Image (cartoon, rainbow, N blue to C red; front, side, top):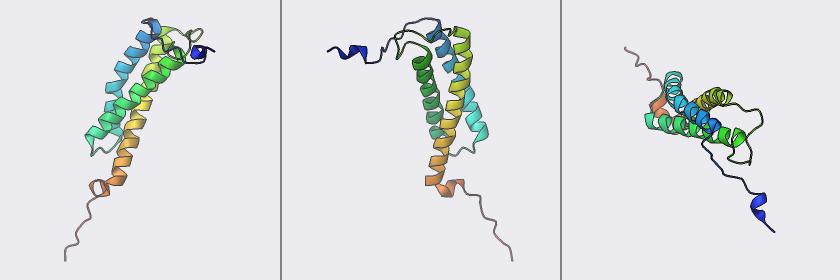
Length: 124
């Protein structure tokens, strides 16, 4: 019994879909970093950077597996490189921002003193 027919293809040809997904990923990294810093009150910058990069990388791999030949032998029918590029920019940016903000909230929950507003001292 040959199990290779049930396993993922794991083929990454350098075709238009891969190149469009890769450039969309590269453009979404600085975009998601900028938006994550802008939307979140960042105290732990390293956490936000790691979260944004991990989210965009996850988006890149998910799109490559869904549209490209990472999992299946053939690419998605009627998938064009321009559509993959714009979808990659959008999806990777959204996942990068979401992951960065979620990791920032997890760190904020663990270090509450850093994220609390300073209490005003009443003068008598």
